[in-house]
Length: 430
Image (tube, rainbow, N blue to C red; front, top):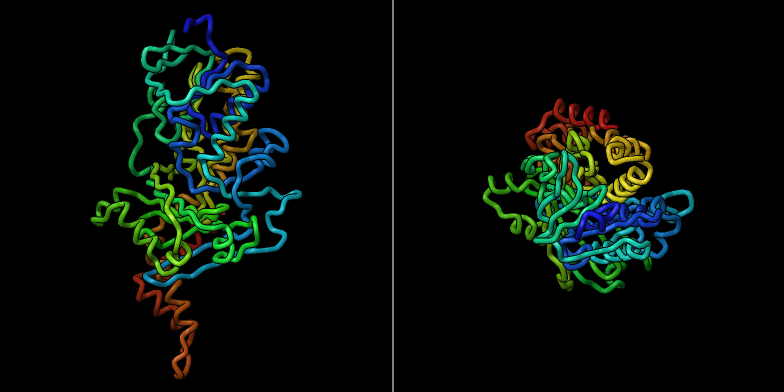
């Protein structure tokens, strides 16, 4: 392709960030080429599977009503595992997440959602090319002017990297180095097919309702946690943890995940199901601190996971909505800027205005909470010990709850001072 036939924008990656960017640009009449390495959008993407619909509303009013969504989340759950024991908290309120002024969240399957969103971008006029691996960026006079895939060269005023965590394109642009092991975890996930009626019975759901469960104590003491999401006729089960720590314990990622699946409080929920999908993917763990020092240069922007836009508070994980917002912000910057030199600074302004950076700053304190020693083994074990003590009746005279709790804290290798410091971290994170 000659430079005379260039596009306004080339987007690398057709995930939520890339497709949202393409949709917004094409709607405003920009010529857009979206290049996806997978055979179809979403075919190589892995996510827990939860999406907040406000992001689709920001992309286009009413768009969520036709989106490829699974179940509306009406049950927010937290589970603490210790040995064969578990504690479960289920928050449910009849009017919760039913629309109106409140934003809604749904479970999703990325293969379906990403393909649907990319199709919507095509309907706006964007071009989509799948099964193509971009190998190089084309640079002229210090500016990115296009991409190279095999022997083909394609040119654009701006190239947008939406190629996910550990962005190869951002490395090529010189904005990031190869990923550091301590900043990412490995997420492992299975999609297990079950009849819709069975899912509803096992999770106490009405038709169309869904549950989102965050799980602590399932990673054998390694920094990380698990998740379980109910889809229309399947369950998404997975866990995320630091692989180097697993190697230190002599356990493979698959072994830890299998132990998690066989837990007495998890396995009955999956019984009779058929695994239809298994995947693993890197997951950014650093939050606000993981955003690269610079996320643009002239002719080039980073969006979504490539720019580190992920929030993990322990009780919820946000990535897809932030990816979409960053794609919208990038598109707005490209549309509003008078020249390519203004696009990057305008992008930073848009990220603030669309509240990505403020939201990530607000959640930054959770990084320190989640780094607390003992959080992934001693804390869940202590909680289960306390509940075991509360509900044990042996015919004797009940002991002092205060003394029993103090004894259990000591038996778990903890101290009141450690718990106080953990509590102060939690308060500070708020």
